[in-house]
Each structure stands twice: as structure tokens, then as C-alpha cells.
Image (cartoon, rainbow, N blue to C red; front, side):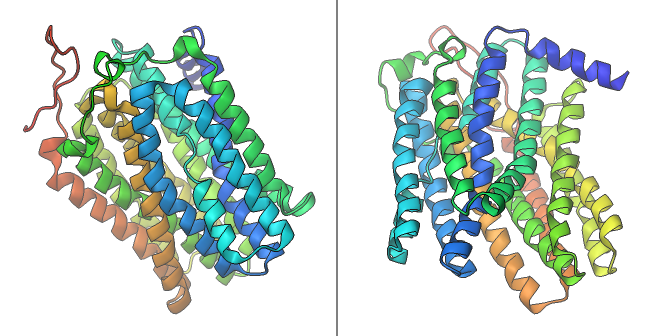
Length: 420
């Protein structure tokens, strides 16, 4: 019965013409994004013999991606999804091919940094998909909640399947195969997504008229969300590195992929089930509850790590830890949509994702340092502490997380409430 209810609810979501098409095409691009990190590391480690080089090149891409993604989002808000995604996808393929050639031809290391940095700012198809759902179900909050939950589940599915697919291609075909496949999937996915014009949100009047607008970070609520997402990204990055180090210490390093897959699986299942719930509280309240739950449940891996737990109990608590992240992310993205006017949807969501990306990079770096100088399970203190920090930030800024939809004849867009 629960599975029937799940299928029936999401079937209703896809009854809108064109919804299946933009979801499937966008999924290709998001799968490519989840393949990039592992593919790059394996390629450079194999062809250049240096994990250190692979790590720093990857970090350079994360930095430029965090900067470039919001800029692309602003262009999307001003000019439309198709007019930006198509040239961005075609451009992005050029430095990616250049990177593969530089590796193949033995070019200097600085060329790798330049190519990967130039290739990092890909179109944010996840944010564009959420923007389409927000437009299609602008008068149906329950359907938007369901759609945001489904999008989060798709994110988790990609980050379960992508690294596995990349590793298989890199180890069984050629070290270049993972990155090459990711490039083909990313470019074709973005182009096919942009071709789905009937579900593309229309440009708001101000954007169509070419009027400039300020950064979405001028909205206090978005600043609170970005800082919270940055801490949440630290949770993701630190959990990944700590789990790999812990599994290695137990002599089962290959099992790290399965353990991390359980984290993503917990979040995926929780996201799908969360979508079935009827929201009864304001998004700001739900967000606080989600962050609080995440902070509480991340104490479980810490306890397991410090207690020297084996792989099976650790896998169980990591699955449980994953279940708290999806409701937090779903409600956070809902808040981004509620806090910002439609003309800044894509830029706002790109800024939020950039906060997560920066947090992942910082969390991974800190966890790596801890793994080298402390007992294996000690590293789980970092994601637990980052989750607690996220809760403190959300609590401190809670008065900025309440919105009230208001419309007037002159400006039929959301107006942000400055206080509770």
C-alpha cells in the first residue's frame, strides 16, 4: 500500500504535459555532474601519478564553479533558460576536451588547472528544473512540495549512481572514459533540456524589459539559508572523507563506496516519503525542525566511530543519518523559492548550491587533515559539529525565514516579510 500511494502521488505530479521530458533530460546533466569528481581524480592519478595534483585541480574547479554558477543563474533569470543553457553547454565542452588532450599530450600542470577551472561553470539543471516545477505548480503548494521532494531524491540517486558508473568506466575502459562520458551526457542533457520549451518559465516583466536588479543575497533570509547550506555542505564533505578513512582503517577500503551509497539511499528514501506528507507548518518552521533532526541524528555516526563499530552497524547509522538531510534540503529549496521574486529564482538557487559546494570542499579538506592525525572514528566529530553549527545559524536567523505572499496590481511577485 505505501508503494502504491507513492506511485499514485508522483504519477499525478507528472500528469502535466512536458514534465517527464524535462525531468529525464535534466537527469542526464545531473548524472554527469556527479561523475566529474571521481572521473577527474582517477584520470590524473593514473596518467600523472599524483593524488595531490588531482585534489588541487578538483578544488580549483569547485572554486570557479561556486563563482560561475550564480552568474549563469543571473543570466538565466534575465534571458531565459534555453538562451543561456545552450551556449553554456557548448562552451563547457571545449575546455573539457582541452583537458583530456592536455593529459594525453603531457602538457604542463598549469594547463590542467586552467582547463578544469574554465569547464567548471556548467548550467545548473537542477535549479532550472525546480524553477519549472515552481512555475507549473505556482498555485498548488502541495504539488510544489512534492516536486521539490522528488528533485532531492533525484539528486541523491545521481550521487549514488554517478561515482559508481564513473569508476567502472575509468577502470574497465580507460582512465579518460569517465570524464569523456560525463562530458557527452552533460552537453547532450543540457541541450535536450533546453529544447523543452513548452515547460520553460516565461521571463517576468522586469527581466523581459531588461531592468537590472540587485543580488539575491540582499534578502536576509537567503543569507541565512546560504550559511546554513555551507555548514550542511561541510557535513557532506566531511562524512565522505571520514568514511573512506574509517573503512580503510578497518582494512575494507572498497566498502567505503557502499557505505556512502547508504547515506545517499537514506536521503533518497526520506525525500520520496517526505513528499507524501502534507505540509502543516510554515516552511521556516519545517526548516528549523529539519536542521535540528540532522544535528541530532549525526551524533549516531560519531558514537559508532568513537566506539570502533564494524562496517554493518556503521552502515546502519549512516543510512539513518542520511534520512535527515533530504527534508532539510527540500524545505530549504522551498524557502529559496518563497523568499525570492520569480525574476531571481535561478540565481538564488545557484547561490544556495554554491554554498553547499564550498562547504563540501571545506569539509573534505578539514576531514582529510583530521584523518591523518587522529584516530579513524574521530573524524565523525566534524560532520556532527557542522550540523550543530547549521542549527545555530538557522536559529539565529529564524526571524528572516518567514514569508508572506502578497500581490498588488503593480508588482504581482512575492514580498518578503522582514520579521516574525
